[in-house]
Image (tube, rainbow, N blue to C red; front, side):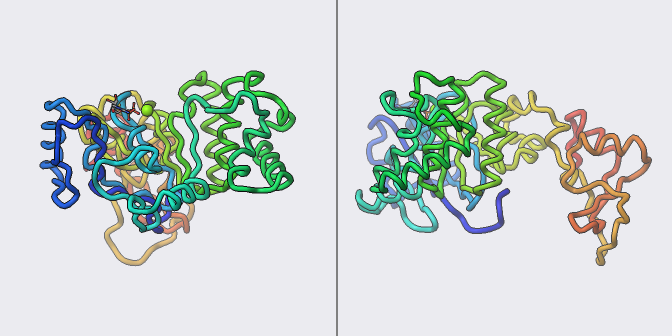
Length: 354
Ligand SMILES: Nc1ncnc2c1ncn2[C@@H]1O[C@H](COP(=O)(O)OP(=O)(O)O)[C@@H](O)[C@H]1O
Ligand SMILES: [Mg+2]
C-alpha cells in the first residue's frame, strides 16, 4: 500500500502537445494554472494541435500503485512516456526522487532508465529470435553483467513469474499470458524502482487477465515498487490501484483512491465508469463512518466492524444488529459508528452519506 512517505515522481504543470499551431504559448516561465490551463488546452485544440497532456500535476508516492485510466486517446500512454522521457514533454517540470529529470544529460538519462526504470508494454516487445532466458537477461547484458550473473538472475525472475521449465522456449511457442510473464520478468530483472506498465493485460482473455492481475498484486506485496500502470478498464484500475488518475482529452479530471472515486465521481465522465463498478466490493466502512467525537480511545471488545471492511463484508453484520454499528481500528479501538441508513444509501448509489 501507499505509504505516507516520500514522493517518487512528480509532474508539475507538465504538457505534451503534438503540432505547432500553439507557437510560443508554452514558455515554462509563464505556464497557466487551473482553469487558465484548461482554456489554453481548448484554444490549442481548436487551432489544430493535439493536447495529449495538458497541465498535469501529480505526486506519486514511493511504493504506490498508481493507475492512469481513461478512454483510448485520452493521453495515458503519452503521459507515461513523458515520465520516462521516451517522449519529451513540451513544457513543465518532472522530478524523480525530488530531482529535476528534464535537465539531466543524455548519458544520465540512459543510466536512470537502465537502472531505475522497468517497462512493460501491451504487445510484449520480446525479441523473437531469443529464448525466454535470453529475453529476460537482455537488460542485464546491456548493463554489462557477466553471463553467469545474468543467467542466474534471469532464472530467478522466470521462477518468480511462474515460467519454470520454459527458459529455453522461444516467444512464438508461448501463449499471450506467458509472453507477458516474460515481459514482466524482463522488466523486473534490473530491480527497477519505477515500474511502468502500459496496458500490459489488454491483449489477454478475461480469465488470464484476472490471473495476471493477481500475479501483479502478489509481486507488488513482495517488492513494493512504485508502479505507474495504464489501463482503459475501470474495474482493472479499481482492483489494482492505491490511487487512480482519470484522464480525458489530455487532462487529469480526478485523482483519488478507488473508494473516493466510486463514492464521489467528480464529473459525468467519471460517473459513467463508476456505474459499472460493484460498489459493495469497493466502498470501505471508514468512508461511511461518523468519527467518535470524544477523546480517549476505548476498546471495542471485538463487537465492531473493522474500518477497512468493505460494504459487502459489513452487510451481513448490519442484518444481525440494529442501530448504529460500532467501528474499530487495527488495534481494536473504537473510532466511530456507521448509521445503518448510510449503508443503505451507499448501496443504492444515491446519497454518499455526507
Ligand atoms: N507521436 C504522436 N504524434 C501525433 N499525435 C500523437 C502522437 N502520439 C499520440 N498522439 C495523440 O495524442 C493523443 C493521446 O494519445 P495516447 O497518449 O496514445 O492516448 P491513450 O494512451 O490514452 O490511448 C491522441 O489523440 C493521439 O492520437
Ligand atoms: Mg495508450
